[in-house]
Length: 172
Ligand SMILES: [Zn+2]
Image (cartoon, rainbow, N blue to C red):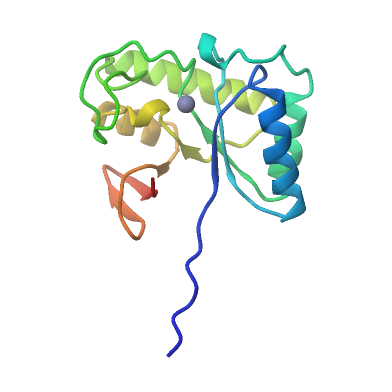
């Protein structure tokens, strides 16, 4: 038997109205040229100065809606992308995180508000993408409570279930 070729999901992180216009143009033209259906990890209310690379794009959400309409999956990429917590994450790759170690109630508020912002822009966020891989058990509970049961993180060869969510693993 001939093994079927590997298939990969493409994920674009850190999407927000002030991301680098030049970088995004190149990515967007590849998505369109090859009819890719990536995971677009959008920050609902970016406050991270490192992601203020270009003046705010007034058409940002329109672009995201158009790509979602052509098959892209919208990811909830944290809330404000401020990684001010220093706690261990379930996926230990970075030292600081927006969510890991933050009280459950705050995490619930942030996730609820983030989803509200994206939905208010006409997007349908379906999958959680944590900034810097930072999240904990409380994040998973908050996501389940909000009806988000997909997560993009962890290292494995095939998707698996943990903490009530289906994890879509990634490769570095
Ligand atoms: Zn990020």
